[in-house]
Structures are given as C-alpha cells and as structure tokens.
Length: 502
Ligand SMILES: Cc1cc2nc3c(=O)[nH]c(=O)nc-3n(C[C@H](O)[C@H](O)[C@H](O)COP(=O)(O)O)c2cc1C
Ligand SMILES: [Mn+2]
Image (cartoon, rainbow, N blue to C red; front, side):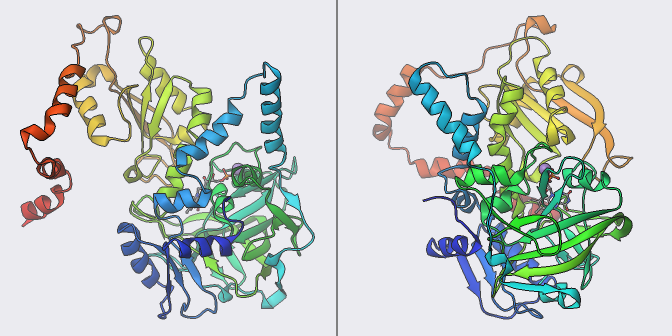
C-alpha cells in the first residue's frame, strides 16, 4: 500500500480499521462539535464524520489525526520514525562509491525528482465551480470552536501562495476567521513564509485555499520547511507519488486536484482587520490583532464535498500528533545541522515551542550550551523558550527520567543559562510580543574540566545478577501485577490532588 491518495480513500481506510465513526444526529458547529471532539480526543477515540451539521449540507470530518496509530496510518508507515528514516536516507546521501551504491544513489535522486507536483487537466476539486455572489462561505459548516472566539474559523486549510519575486510556491496551514460570506482574516504569523510572500507583494496577492486533502498533503502544509522548499514536493516524496495539480479558475495558481473544496481569492496588501480572539493551541485566547483580509472570488468543489476541521486548545488536542509527526520527521534534518544530537522531545503539554528536551553525545566542556544555542538558531526551533539538555543515554521521551536528571545533575547557579531571543507569535507570557527570555538547563554529567568535583558513578546492577534473577524469577513467586500497580503512582496524582483541594 501507499499513503491514501485523497480524503475519500483516507476515510474508507479509517472506517475499515475501525478508526472512524459516522454521526447521524444533528450537531451544532457552534461549540457542540468542539465538546464532542474534546472528549473523544482526550479518550484516544476515533475520527468523527458528522453527517448532519446544522445549517450546512456538507459533512464535517474531525479528529483524523488524533492518535499515533492514525498518524502512522496517514503515512502508511509502521512508525513516525520510519517516515523520518525515509527522509534521512536522502538527506544523508554520501557520494556513491561502487556501482551498486551509484545505482542506489540514482534511485534516491530519482525519487526526489519524481516528487515534484504534476499538472493535470482536470480535477475532482472542480466538479462544481461557484463564482461571483453565489460563492459563499455560508455553504461550509465552519466551526465556532470556543465560547469567546470572535467568529467561526476555518481551522485545517492548506493556504497556497507564490513568492512574487521568485514565483516559488508556498503552502501553509493558517486559520481563517470568517468575516462574512465572502471574506476571512488570514492568520499569517510574523515568522511564517506565507506572510513573507504577502509582505513582498506591491498591491495584491492571489491566494488559493485547499480543504479536504489526502492526509500527507494536509500534514505537509503544517511542516516547518525552509522557505524555498515547496511543501507539495515534500508531500509527493512522503506519498511516493507526486501531488496532482489543476489550474485554479479565477487566480493564477495551481491547486491539488484531489481537494474536496478550494477557495480562490486575493489579499490586498493594506487591507487589515482585527483577527481574534481565538481559543488557541497555547490553551489561552489569543487577543485581537490586525491581520490581512482574504476576499473570495470562487469556490470550487467536489460534488458532496466533505469539510475538514480541527480544534486546538488546551493540550492535548488533535494537533498534538501533527506536532509529534513533525518532531519525528525532522529529527534527521536537525541532526544534519547538529550531529551531536541523539534525540529530542517536544512535550505536547509544552505546546511544542515552550519546551524542548534534547539528548547529546557530549564531547567537551560547554557542549550542552553549544547545542542550546544551535537550537535557538535553527528554523522554527529558534522560538523554543526552554531547553533541557541530557546525556546520550537518557531517554528524552521519559519525562520522569528527565526530571530525575534535572534534579540530580543540575547546580542551578552553574548549569542554568538565561538568555533572550525571538519567541512564538502567540506566546502571551513575555513582557513584549515576539521577544523575551529563554532558559537552558544543562542536566548532563559535568567533568573536572567544567570546574566541578569528581562526578560520581551512576548506580547500575551487574549483568550477571540481572541474568540470574531473570532465570530464577518464577522461583521467587512474586506477582508482577503488584509491581505494575506500584508504578502507577504517576496516574494516581489526579485523585490525590482532588482530595487535597477539598
Ligand atoms: C492546526 C494548525 C493550525 C495552525 N494555525 C496557524 C495559524 O493560524 N497561523 C500560523 O502562522 N501558523 C499556524 N500553524 C502553523 C503553521 O501551519 C506552520 O508553522 C507552517 O510551517 C507554516 O508554513 P510556512 O512556514 O510555509 O509559512 C498551524 C498549524 C496547525 C497544525
Ligand atoms: Mn513554507
């Protein structure tokens, strides 16, 4: 198999695997769907296809990315690390040596060349073409997600623009606040490529918005790629098949042929509106701020189009696994630049930009600090607010172990680096927007060269005794279920907290 070719195939696969539930009951896109979805996401539940959304003929799909299993199914991969390996293979290509390697190298190069999007004559995304006043966003079941949201927001779009200077395409996922039947805001944050295209325009920039894509292409819109790299090329590479494009009807752009819905329109450089408030992935409402206005010129769609949505909010939400996919898939690229990095973890509860745990192969004094600065200088990771560095043998995904290392190995006076730099657009904590403090915690072992006393050895049982106890375990008659119960101290903290509050 390969990753699903379009949203229909994706839905069929999800359904076959028991990963999708159709809901026939009428539901309100205003708040009700959010609450249903929130309970489902938090329980690790299925994707939801609401077939009867109040006020619209179109079904709404949500929670398609809500679990690790579904995220892997989206890539048709056994794990997200397997997707990373595929990308890493190409990134780490060395000049080939023998003939066999040369042939293999050529195959890899061909797989990149074959990944470029391909223009085709017709696409299902244009089965219906609605132009002029008939093109209305009122047709779509756009969700109002949270009580204090300013309006309904389109939350899972792939927004397509071209750099007016170079003509290169950009695709990004930026929420769009509905302002009326033919206008939305465009939430192009300050660090994003989409905004750079807009800023480079003199008067007007044409925009196309694809909704309801195959899951890999949808994911690629959220991937933090360097500006000159076309997200659709990467989508083609990850799919193993190029993304097919058709010419849009009213703008000079190409759009994915397999999309359920395409919004075509333009943005005038000096037309701004107050966007927000919006219940954001920070877990707080983002206050109103001026953003550009998107004006609709046409809606094209499949017959019986399905509208895709996602809700962000206090973590964990569905976007957690989109973020985790990026964390895994980009590890080889991160290691290309900073090879001493073994692994990293961006905790979901840290909303990705707030915290990064990184393990390194430490080789010299100050190495942890070197890596902190490298991360603070690396693509979107540069917005990371706090970094914890541990040694290579520490599992960065085991937060208990990380906390143990921070507690055991850190002298706050010596090992904490406080600095400043650019911060996430949505971070409400810094005194000024966009800029503020950063913290790096060096939880690695220190050596005499770093001015410490002799570092004590870690406690470790001998392999002989471990093997002996393995062999004799049954003889002791100790139930492991009991041990598992004991290990559950972590989960029990919730009822304990509730008790203390009484
Ligand atoms: C569900 C979801 C919603 C997002 N909403 C926004 C948004 O409103 N504005 C924004 O700038 N980035 C948003 N992002 C992040 C961007 O999609 C991401 O940074 C992407 O790399 C931007 O593409 P670009 O670098 O080509 O501009 C969102 C991501 C996800 C997964
Ligand atoms: Mn981009």
